[in-house]
Length: 164
Image 1 (spheres, rainbow, N blue to C red):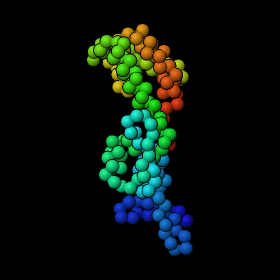
Image 2 (image 1 turned 90 degrees about the horizontal axis):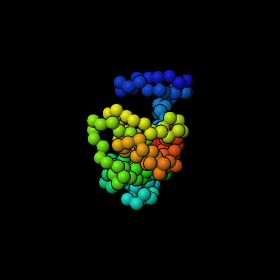
Image 3 (image 1 turned 180 degrees about the vertical axis):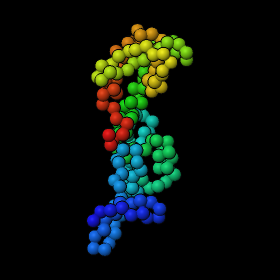
Image 4 (image 1 turned 90 degrees about the vertical axis):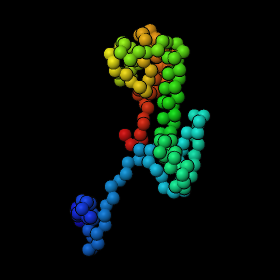
């Protein structure tokens, strides 16, 4: 029989069978960001956009990588984050090399998506810090055209967690 009991002040799901009580632990979602069990391998970014793996041994290095959000229990999540960050850096660099600095309280243009359609739109004060802003619609469209395939992936397929 399944029921709930208050144990140490906390309501827990339990199963009672033949006079024995078993606590039913809730399933943890596998997001790709969680720590893994000791001796299993996790992925981390080692500086050249390639996956590297380490064995979890609860060391200071493991703790540091985890605290820096550079610890992935899912290689697919690692690849998604790595591709997104590479695209982001390339677009920031393109904007810096091909456009003027963007002032805080001026009109600016952003690249955004409506479903699978990638647009360039004027924005008033709203900034999207994960992608650059542009001084004109023409500059935004130049950048969009240059990175259109990567942007299509970003806006339609990119996942920052594996349980959704």
